[in-house]
View 1 (cartoon, rainbow over the protein chains, first blue to last red):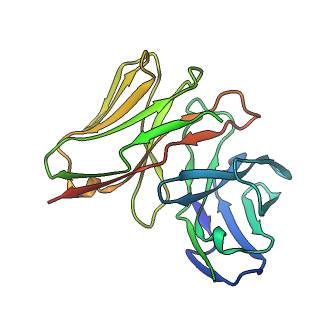
View 2: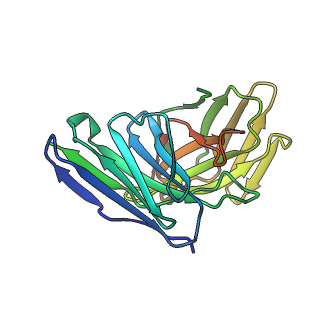
View 3: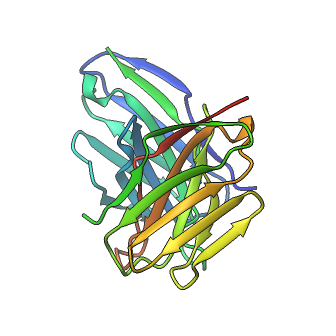
Length: 115
Length: 115
């Protein structure tokens, strides 16, 4: 089974802190994604990466950056955390060449609270 | 930004009843319409998907109905059970976007099945 793990389930940070969220997948997938989930807004794509060191902005990249130095690991960075970044953060991965290209595998999520 | 509009936002159904969740889309180039299921404390997971050249797909108690002319698709859960209580997302993979196509998610429906 595909496994996507996230470094923390719950995280509490102060405004202005630099925050790192880590994601690791064990299935050698090329594509990895970071979403935030807020009630009534669904899943909004922050950034994605289709290869090592490659990244593209999603729909809401402002205030975030990412890093992908190894294929299995994709990090989301909040340069200076703000209260409006309090949310559930979900990481996902997907292989590049696949007939069912709509199937993404999600991690359990990190609930981040910024105070 | 192509959208997938989902309704209702929340739904309460008695055990044994039929749960119906609806989605409407804009982009006629979408080539699959998946549904994701998310239990509390977990990431979303693929539940069922349909191609636009098929009007209906059934897997157990879950059925997707697709109306191409109306650009709508819906999820029906027959004989709904308390274990079906979850948040459901409709989705569509955005075609032709970089080498890793984005998946556009609806806003989600929180389904509660009353015993």
